[in-house]
Length: 196
Ligand code: SF4
Image 1 (tube, protein in one colour):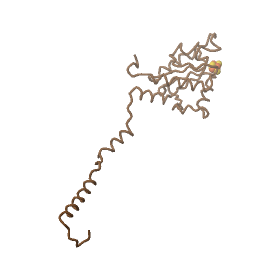
Image 2: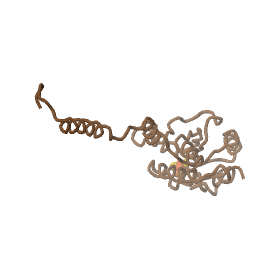
Image 3: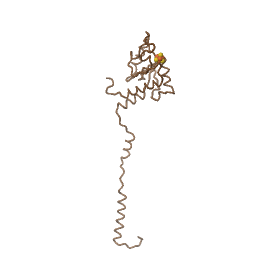
């Protein structure tokens, strides 16, 4: 319709109706929820788990070994800690000189009865929870020195052992496998039964 046209009342009604229809059509979209961002935040940032699972994950991902390397298996442990095998992948590269800052004893070597009280003292000074890996035949049973008058036939005579890694000496891969076994053991721990 051009300006200056004379409209019938019917035409005016039609034009008005069209304008109203147009406004109604534009007003039908869903109004965005002002709290939509919160849903996205919850989706992205909240993870539900149990206290046990969280605690066990933290414990097994940051085991700190204490120095206890009395014989030749120690060199395999040193290789395990070096770049080729690299135990820092498991958060274990910090070898503690103080038992008070360690929670894992890797017994890499032959133990004599003369050294036994010192090893027991080191173990006692480690805070709870703590774990022991017996590395090598000597640590497990005294190895080739088992019948010697001076050798302890296994660390488990003086401290509780969690994982045994056989071999004379075990290769770094075997020690890494033993560490993975210990991780699985820690993953099954529960705060409810701990200390009972
Ligand atoms: S198990 Fe073999 S390599 Fe290890 S400390 Fe004993 S003799 Fe040495």
